[in-house]
Amino acid sequence: MNIDKPRPQAETRIIASFSRHAKSYDKNARLQKTMAERLASLIPEGPLGEVIELGCGTGVFTRHLLTNPLNGLTLNDIAPPMIEQLRKQVTLPESTRFLIGNAEMIDFPEADLIAANAVFQWFCRPKSTLAHLYSRLRPDGRLVFSAFGPGTLKEFRDTVGLQSPSLLQPMGEWVAMLEETGFVLEEAVPETRKTFSPDTRALISSLQQIGAAPFRMLGVSDLKKLIREYDRGFKTAQGVYASWEIYYISARRPA
Image 1 (cartoon, rainbow, N blue to C red):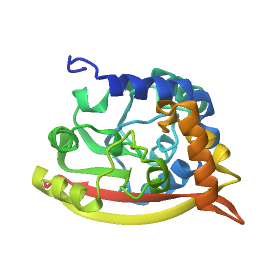
Image 2 (image 1 turned 30 degrees about the horizontal axis):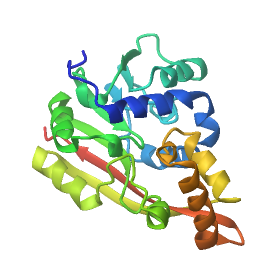
Image 3 (image 1 turned 135 degrees about the vertical axis):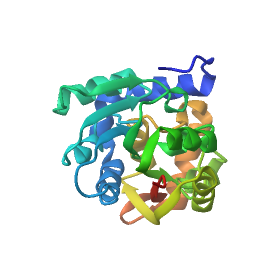
């Protein structure tokens, strides 16, 4: 069930961006795929019971969940075209349930595991959302997620003062919110990476193709300035680079 509240403008832009690029997402989501592989190592071994995946997208992490026995699967995403792509390319249990909408606004069923790959940085109210997810977990249930931290794409912000379209919380904030909500922290692993593209235009294009870049907010002259200065400041013999700060977190609701 969706909680009936007005949709903010930022949410509308996010839905439009991910919907527009649903068909190109898998081809360009190389980082998200490697994140999914690492996050999968935090999933408890054995039967998973009832599972909810937030922000399932095209099924990048869903595939990992389906390697384990489970009693039921609920998949959520904010953009319907992403769900459409998932259904075309992932073989799902017949009982799979779909909940389309903002994960912060949905009254989810009870679950034994709630998982999300590269989603939590999009939350506008992370602490209240964590409290709601805690209430939907059964005793000894797990919350497993990855999220981007404030070091992510910092080169773009340093170059032209570009703001991130998502909320990039430091690791300490996530840990504090989880503990204040009642979770028992099991793992919190930070990671930093650099990815490379032939030039800034190619980097921007790849970010746009996964629906997560705010470059439509820039005018033509500002975009040209960004490309020119980024090429000058962050180009190496291997191409231009972008930095990513990533967290992998597992927490448990006490029995």
